[in-house]
Image (tube, rainbow, N blue to C red; front, side, top):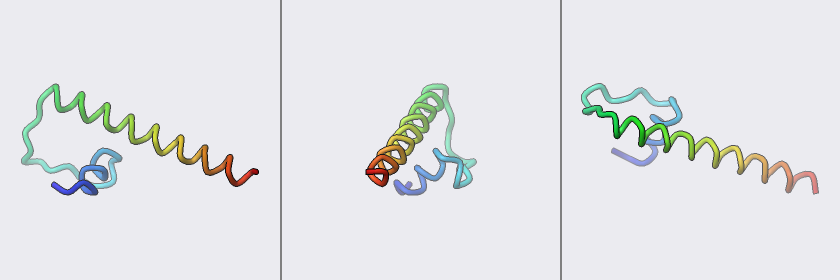
Length: 54
């Protein structure tokens, strides 16, 4: 699986592959990955806004 497709799945942009096996541990890992990507994007937006204001 490509990295861009995986990021798209984490951010609910791309539909998930129904044939992929699921488990509790992978669900928890995907939740943590979603959270870190969203927090990273939020911080990047805040930094860009601060740089524009200067």
